[in-house]
Length: 125
Image (cartoon, rainbow, N blue to C red; front, side):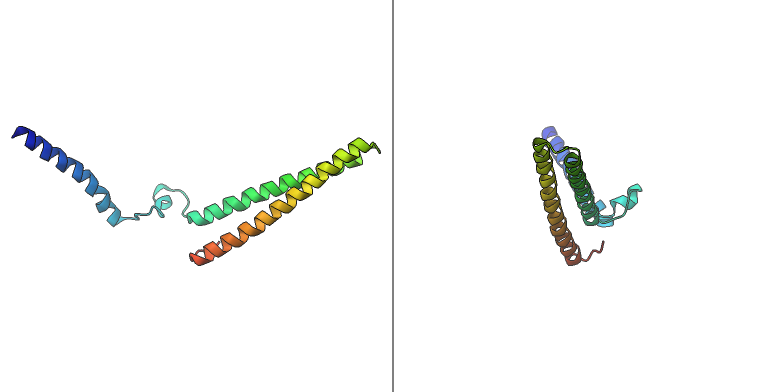
């Protein structure tokens, strides 16, 4: 009889922990969207935050590509007519331009997708 009482008490104890989150979730935001306001963090929508992070990352990559293009130009200008240095500078310049084209294409695609996603979900950036 004692084992049954201990078993029932432990089951009641476990079930009470399963019911507590449901009761608490009924009183507040169950998806955690308003978690920032309760903790003092930002209240911005996570989709907008993800969109801004993607845009900032692509912007930084664009800066790196422009620096590579400028470095290729500097190498070309300081080559002094040496064909090996000019060929190296041409490769760096060509690689920087290709990278810049890829980054701008990725930025355009990400901008389009994010705008469509945010407008479809009713969120404006």
